[in-house]
Length: 414
Image (cartoon, rainbow, N blue to C red; front, side, top):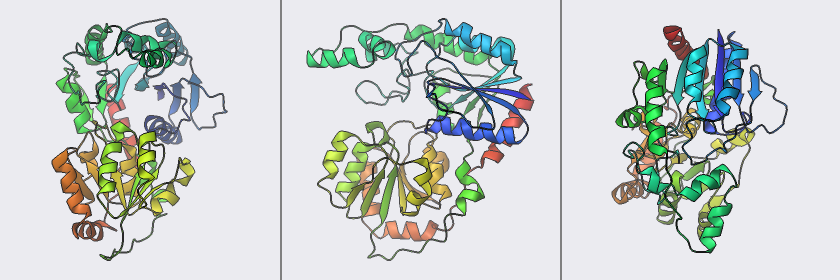
């Protein structure tokens, strides 16, 4: 079977959630005899040494542009690629720098599946937070986007980076005008989604949000992704963990980019009201870095390489996953759980699909929820939780198990 995976917006070697997943599942498929090609963009010009084929294009749109583009000349570029490859299955994972009409062209040549790893089809900002950082899971068919996204932002992202916004900020101009075209793109997307062969949501909340926005398909399934950290080759790095005495400090760990939508403010509230240790590995907002300078029990270890992950996980007692947005299915959850690390996390997005009373603690990202998390952290409850679940945490789905499930979906539509 010939499979074309579409994952544009980043170089395929980029260390990010979706690109990591696409590399992993493509490699697993290739190991099992499938003819796999990954189409990507933003090529970093480095040699690609994978057991699957790769093909790079250079789209006209900038990744994370905020304009609603239904069609442009890249539709023809992608069509020529598909004609040359002649795949049986086209599996779309990410196309944040391609126009929407690409989906219509793909359907002419092969069976098409869209995996919903993000919300880019219903939110140009992708993370369902408006310009003020407030949650927006239903934008009234994207009519609200006209005022949320300014006209100059669409130019900014598309052509000249952040220059216009920086200039307007210096001039203290909040907005020149509203943007447009979002409602039309939304309606076109809803129509195209109905006509593809399958939709795969990576968590139950993702499916729920798309359905709340009217996106449907005759074959719309939830299928949790597999992750290499679930393989025995990864899990064997972690030995039996010792129980904690109540006079020992717990080492809470955050892995990833500690930005606003990933819970930077939540992290600060938890850290400044607890005497346990807090460790950060990855990127960090400037204001967070400045704030933690006054907290001797908070440690920032800088950015890390993927090869450092095992050593980092060995140093963490409890993982923190603090997203304030509807985080689809954060892969750091898999990394923590497959290392035998319990999680304290928010009840957002796909996180509750994986974190339960058997491997962690969930709370709402509001004042009452934060208080409940602090009550846990600052009492014997945190030791009771830790000692109860360590060494009993089940692994998540392996890439091989996930591939078998995908193959069943492929066979169902071919």
